[in-house]
Amino acid sequence: MAFTLEEPTEVVMQRIDQYLQENAPRFERDLCDLLRIPSVSADSRCREAIREAAEWLRTHLTALGLAAECIATDGCPIVYAQSPPVDGAPTVLVYGHYDVQPPEPFEQWISPPFEPTVRDGNVYARGATDDKGQMLTHVHSTEAWLKTHGSLPIQLKFLLEGEEEVGSEALHALLDRSAERFACDVIVISDMPQFGPGQPAITYGLRGIAYYELRVQAADSDLHSGTFGGSVPNPIHALATMLAGLMDQSGRITVPCFYDDVVPMTEDERARFAQLPFDQQKFLAQLGLDTTSGEVGYSTLERRWSRPSFDINGIWGGYQGEGSKTVLPAAAGAKFSFRLVPHQDGDKITSGLKQQLAALCPPGIRWELIEMHRSPGVLVPPDSPYVMAAARAIEQGFGCAPVLIREGGSIPIVTALREKLDADPLLLGWGQDDDNMHAPNEKFSLADFHRGIRASAHLWHELGRLRPAA
Ligand SMILES: [Zn+2]
Image (cartoon, rainbow, N blue to C red; front, side, top):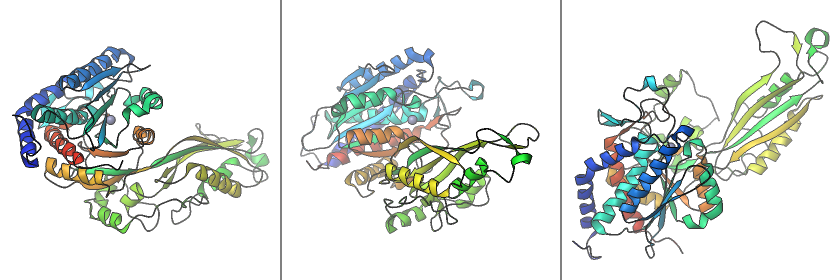
């Protein structure tokens, strides 16, 4: 039956929901077909499987009526597909990855990693949740629209890469070369967990990072600690003093200007985090700890998600072998990093850091600071129309409203997509924390798979009602 514009929304969505129900078993078969392909990007013996997975997706997207192709790269092919533009409606780019982590150690898998097996409502296979299962929810939702309605309410672009697990080099190069091709208003990514079972989430913020190595040197060579101890500078003492001086007793970072661009948390955000079902005692027990630490005046979730932090990642110097050696070492070093929140300026932090290290450095010590890498934080306004559209769609798909959360880590490809395409990401995770991503017995709940497809189908509808500013 042909669809007419006068048809009320409910009728359209009812027909789509019915299509999803009728086709649910076949969606699971499709997922298993893709999971059977051992597309391990880290393993050069899997090159043929990588090509096979890319071709599987291209064929599948073409069959839906999308213009789809495999873009050749120096590494793994990138699958790209798009639907026609829709006047006035947003263009939505779906990012996903069809490559998977190596399955080893094989002996710890209950069923073989590339023979998808359903147990207790979960499909077990490498890539089940990361990211084949989550990625396919958007493909299946698109199918439902095109097969029942003939067209989409938005323009969709699928950008599916095969190197996410090894650094996305080919995609970075492609974005540098031809970002305009992938121009969009918003980027949809489902490659992360929900907040908890039955509690879907929208992740609207990621922290960034600035990573450094500090090398300190005193005498030209190691000295005898009896002969020279107490009379010449010890670089490990100096290093310890300098590192300890970067944070004060209240957990504040002492680098000048460090907090200049930190946007304070809103009362609304603090209230939302406080309401999340986060069990501090369980959190501590899982880690084998009896107390948390961090910046005074902030809760654990606030410290992890919305405040910058400082961590020493490694430290070396002097004798570390068996027995004792009475050495006064010549050199020492450490690696350390700051987790940054959005708007913090990496250049400003590096220059403030140099200033602070110079002030902290004891006499007689030469030091060198090496900047290793840096990536800014990401923050999408939680009240943006896109986030609100996603929240409505998730409520339709999962039967409950999502919580709005942030994440303490960085996802480099998200930062890159956001910068190169100048569009906000919508991070919509359908997985669970215990899905064993990157570990043996990776799984994905089939109920979440179908809820994700339904949420995605509603997302195209909700986004189609938005009119982005020209
Ligand atoms: Zn992933």
